Image (tube, rainbow, N blue to C red; front, side, top):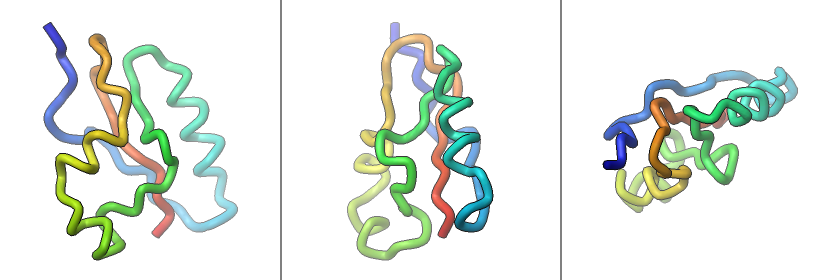
Length: 76
């Protein structure tokens, strides 16, 4: 049974050059956390991405079994 949560648990919000990439990399090392394949999918801040729909956003993450938390590090 896949336990991938329905919604993101966190969003890393920060300015450019504020170590969001480092934080995302560290979190992504945890076996129960998934960071978006593209670190900054900008789903919530870029209308053209938002129009792609939540299913598109969710597919940006590794949804393997055992993932308990997922989120992204978009700086916008």
